[in-house]
Length: 301
Image 1 (cartoon, rainbow, N blue to C red):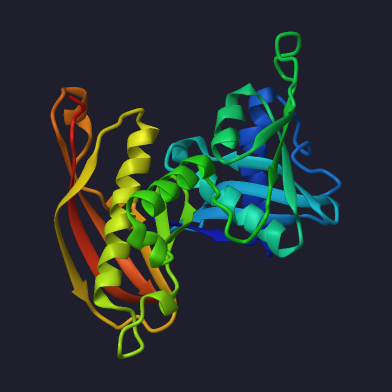
Image 2 (tube, rainbow, N blue to C red):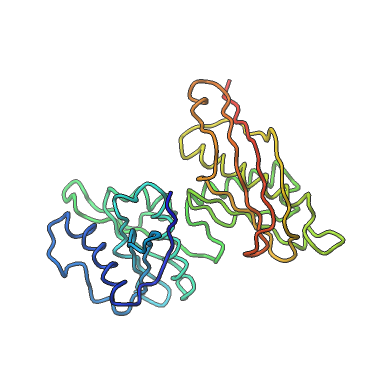
């Protein structure tokens, strides 16, 4: 999958690409005229744009404030050629993070039936349900509470249940302070405080690093199982880790689904599934270690 990144449009050229995509995805299919892709809040809103390696706009979105505590997302759009890769979640996260930094306590969004499920998976709840039987173009209003900077952007209830399972079934994970920091559907990040995992050298204990990485890989397998509507006990069959740098400040473990090898097809045939997951360990932004784990998902008997 091509590399993409979030940018803030600020030049005439970048805004031209921004509004072109907004019109092409959100206005042109409904035969709306040029100019309808703008509104009065564009001058005071915060804009974010997802671009590919060539700098082309592949996703756009804006937030504006209705009150000091309430932000609203509008004009969310992903280029159809790039849909289905988790870019919508990336854009939502960027917009919500900006709203949170600016003091928002909640975010609202209006959507039609075809995007309702997506926003609900992102943790939004119905505030006002539209009567789409009488008016197919009517929009639902949804709301999401931004209670803290550690909120989960995607599948928050699943992540909460998974963390609870770890803390109850694997007590050491709670003692280590391991928590799910973020899940986007494509990336899972775990964090743990150094103070609970320190060794005599005042760096993170190697066993703690291994445990953090193991759970990151396991967590990604579990969450993706749920995404596919599958289930089965997960075990680590084999694991190895290569340490590059000591972790002396901020331990992080990041697992990307794109790096996984194997699939869950065998489960549908009643056989065990085998997957290899790669987990990168960081000290803040500094790469510190790479863990490779071979996981087995046992088919239900």
